[in-house]
Image 1 (cartoon, helix red, strand yellow):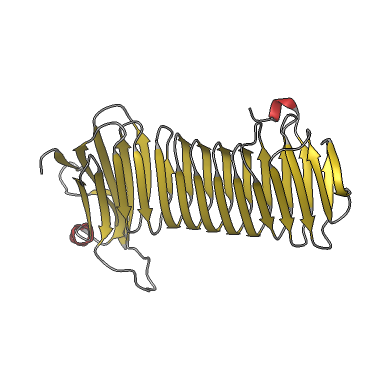
Image 2 (cartoon, one colour):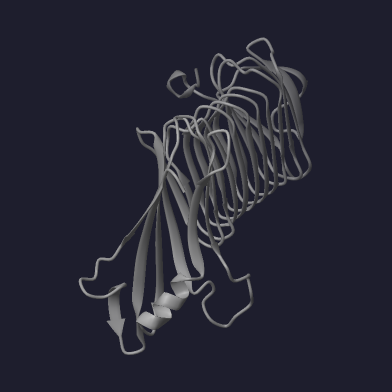
Length: 325
């Protein structure tokens, strides 16, 4: 296909596959496959891998370059050749300047006493700056470096790390931690188990976690965060651009900058209590040390609702050097 180049690298001088470590029962074999496809800055890039990790970086240029590394513990060269045939790397334009990359295992998921899948797959993808990503893996870590315009990640099992993104981010995760440095557009995270950490949410955000701790260090826009089991911690920056709704079954910690304006409505169920520290809050109803408290911070502002089923709710004031701008 025009614009597609394939390079297979062999680092063993005389053999087909690289033997990394030898042993009486077999050895570790590894292969690398490189492919490229023309693409402009801001291109939409979709990556799909059955079982394996995905790492994406932004580099200058007008192409997408993908490197597949596949390794397996096998008996001999013949077994390695058979294993490599199960995973085929494909890269192709998919219309309107988009690029699709696939590295799927031909074998379906099955139960086995042995290691499954038999080989480990890792994809390294270099894209033009400002790319819009759609990433899917059923088992493996996902890492996205800074410089993307929009990111969508679907990962059933594995850690997810996303750097600074100018636009929208959507992350759907199963088992594994989720970390996002900075989101400039709408943010949506749905995770089953593991910790969720968001450095900065500049626009509206919707976060749902079934089991684990969730933290948003700085939120500027409308925010809805729901943790079924675990701690919920949120920092509200200045200015706060929308209503905030926080729900948890454990402790809820809400931190506000010294210039952040908000109207607080905090309620918990016994034995939980409301605690206020280093925050000037003009009460409307309830008091600190009780299960409910309503009041204004800096004269009032967007409504901030915090609910917990039995955990403590802590309202904390931040010093100048920690407040979001």
